[in-house]
Length: 97
Length: 363
Image (cartoon, rainbow over all chains, first blue to last red; front, side, top):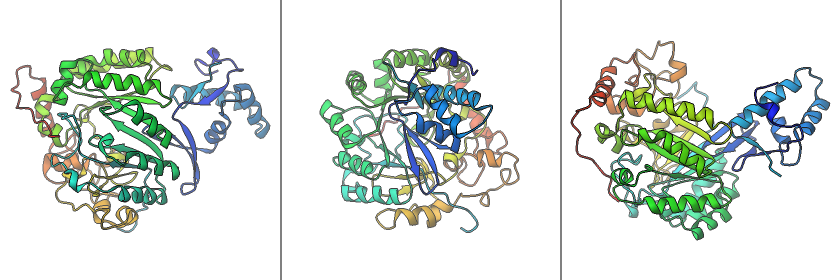
């Protein structure tokens, strides 16, 4: 388990932080994460997770949807690490009730 | 130039006007300011937005001077929204009333960055030329009450670097989403005022230690970044991710540059949007191709093992300090001109070094 994820319950709903949005980029053939004075070119796996971060899905739902697509022993750990990293970078946040 | 793959730019900085109510000692505008009568009309900016979208630009920084002083600002924001370009307003907040802000948000403005000179009104006055503190703080509170992410930007120098801890606490208490600290970069006005702005190494080390501990303490609560002044960094910064590789600037009169400071390079002729398309400027103009790739490099950069990391450093700084934009950035310890930077730092470290008269920009 990545550091700190124990503080976030699997029922938590995730959303993109205010001022952060995804954009399809035809020229660069990827998804970009746009935010104040910063642009992140996303790889495929980051795009797939962030597309599910929609203000409705819980962490648990995001995990199960990805698990249906991929049979991967490290998925749980990879997802936990990515979520922690995205939270600490301010890309996403836990939706408050 | 052949053989160099030109990536499309990601961002455009639209310097709508050089007019500004403040006169900051480190203003990023060139020392020769563009007069109001030479500013681009609104239709030109709307066309630039279309050309930028066609060039796959995805983000726009609306800046100045004070961009709120440009009458067509809201129309430009609407056009950026229409073309799905992320818009960010970079403002002193002077003139940011509730009506103005709500209109910009309704037009599709996506984020706003407000600058503060210092937490102390008298230091702010020393930097900006007049006391705008209360007006700025009111506008900051107003912006924070609206549905738009607000970043706070503070340029750091000798006079406010000791405030780093207090500035971070202030930003956290105000519930600001992002705090950007930026050491003064020495171009234009800031270069003319260097003796009054460059902090000592001790001031810098103390501030960095405060910053590091606050950053840990506030992780997850406040996003923070600090662009350390590269005079004190001892290794050069890669110029804007590479000369004309990610970013294009269009100035108030339509001249296009790869970065805000590039107009200082007097050996290049920069193209104008009034005469050429944004695409031609990006792909084919000699100025934008001048320092792409590695062929332009001279020694020690040409054969340096770090050349792909730092790309020889900043071209503007090389020109300003050596008179030749192709030289290694003198900030680099391997540069034959590094003693220029060393002497400036030694001078800043001396407690009794003579201060030159301040050069304020005019309105």
